Length: 126
Image (cartoon, rainbow, N blue to C red; front, side):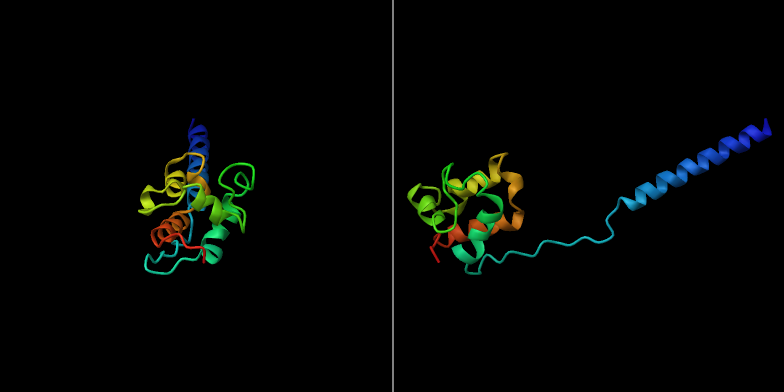
């Protein structure tokens, strides 16, 4: 009986150690906060916004689905199509990336803010 209790105790200790190792190894050692997005910076379509479209949007909006967000076509598609208007929070583009479940995970919080600030600054073709 004493031998059985020893064996059960050893198995229990081993399971606790395995659980502890698993628990600690799943935690991130470092966390990297996203860089702050300056609302007062001047946001440029070609330098700041188009790269967001290129990496996140043109899979679907590459000429087949409106608006066409390919480089060289995105500005006209957004402005003529009525996707950007002031205030930025009420524009269709910003509304889609913040409320449409198909679009929300595609862009980061920082990218959403850049788009919002670009629209709020007049959505210039710069």
